Length: 119
Length: 113
Image (spheres, one colour):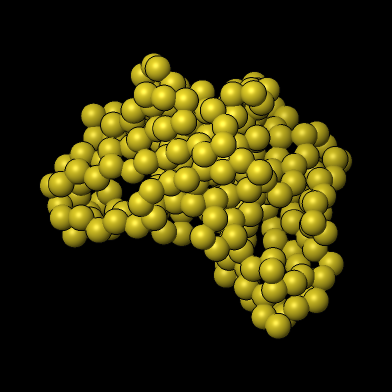
């Protein structure tokens, strides 16, 4: 089946630094990718929807200047957490929709997630 | 707004035990309901789904029935295996085809031999 590679799987960084997380669709082209965040014992929350070649759409309450999303190609989307702080420590997950699939969000392929710890 | 509530975990069972994982939801209209599974080191995968009331989704021995009257979509399996050890997420999608998924917190299932 389709595979989405997310890298890194975990990262530790100092407060104030920026961290980039990559999400790649390995065997399909993804016109749309989604970024989620999950705090401990909380639900998986959609942060933003990333469309290839256009600006991402952010959910209410998510700071677009802090969480920079770039979807420059049909197989790669990146999430950059800028000036990270301890409260940004969380589990981040990406998902991608195959461009050949009809536009229903349940046919999504997920990355394995990135655990970010900000010291 | 939409929300999904899953029972608190983790859940530990012996192999061949019966499994029930509870899921209830709040949504406008008539949502589609899903169960996703995440095996260790892998991404979430769609396990099963139901798109209207009384529908039963099934896959890999797992079943869940869309109960509109109780706003529930409980996941069941008659006999679990060690390989079923994973994190299970209940989710819903309401609105149009391009509307977003709303997830529950997920629950970790561990099956011991």
